[in-house]
Length: 141
Image (cartoon, rainbow, N blue to C red; front, side):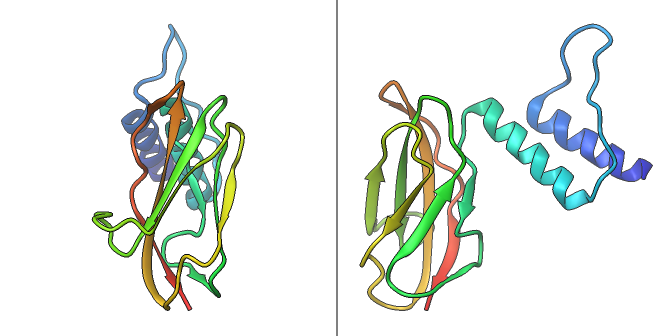
């Protein structure tokens, strides 16, 4: 359990920085390591104003030509989503900018052939685009 707490502390401090205020420190509640790491990532992304892609997840298989893409909400931010056949996005198949508060889109008829695709999302605050998330690979059958 102490090893897990050390790892989680390193993740939290490494992503969010040291806790602020005199006498304050990160409180790590013992739980499954995967859940705790996910919580740490969500805290990090929220603190930086970055969206967290939730669907499709890396390696997930989407069936058919209509694929749902989802992410967490960033208050008062529009989102821009891109999809392409390679992780560098040299060729972009689809780009969509949403209204604030929208947390998913359904890309219809974009994926004409089965294969490997990538997607990414970024928040746009007051007209200023943020950083893209890392490209997420998914498969279309």
